[in-house]
Length: 179
Image (cartoon, rainbow, N blue to C red; front, side, top):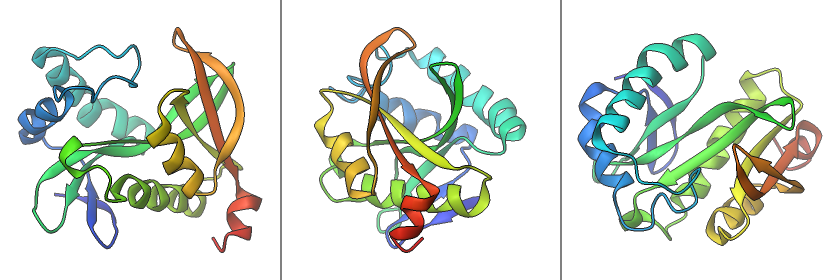
């Protein structure tokens, strides 16, 4: 188990094939996928395929991606959070993304993970900014971004989904926060 990041309450590690059932359980919780892409809940086989590609292709090729997010106190896989390279309006951007098990929401865990990932990105990657792509109605995710110093930069259509807010924080803004 390779740990990528650790916070007070979370471990972000590389996914394992054994994470499939827990990941599928999280994805199929009512409302969990509502603001992820088209909002469609993936079939088990699709999650299995995604997990395989992520483990064997995305992380090795990019050097970053989504990580299994484990709650330290319970030892449970409670989501997936990470850094993803996205093309937004023709420009390659580094996105901080997060998805947390509904039983663990409202505890500041997404904010904690996103903050650690933001800091990791600025400390380890040659980027001038990081973003989060958030569908406008997703108030909870917008609050997470704002708590981490991000602000709405623009709105766009992303992968066919209209009204997506592009939140961002620049390296200079991060440094002013004490980064």
